[in-house]
Image 1 (tube, rainbow, N blue to C red):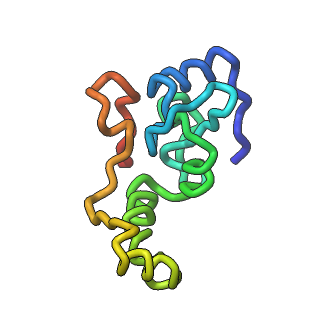
Image 2: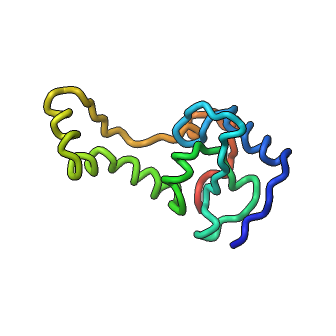
Length: 125
């Protein structure tokens, strides 16, 4: 599906949805660096409409790619086990207490905002 070109007003509306932060990791986001992410990817049948778009940093937008929110969350949640499996330096860092793991479920920044502070239609149906 071809993406439509967003107007400057629409881009500002998207940027303001999360008050200048990446909707996923919560990192401060300069307007000029913002990428727009389709919550439900166009690839998976999502609509190319403002209510399906969130502001994202380059890294989150890249890693989310065509994943659903749940797929992206699962990928992030598996990072510690993937690093442990694939990276000897990571395992050594754990043994020496240089790295601290946490295994709590990933919560995206936009999910921490009170209802109405970010977009309301972010759940997949």
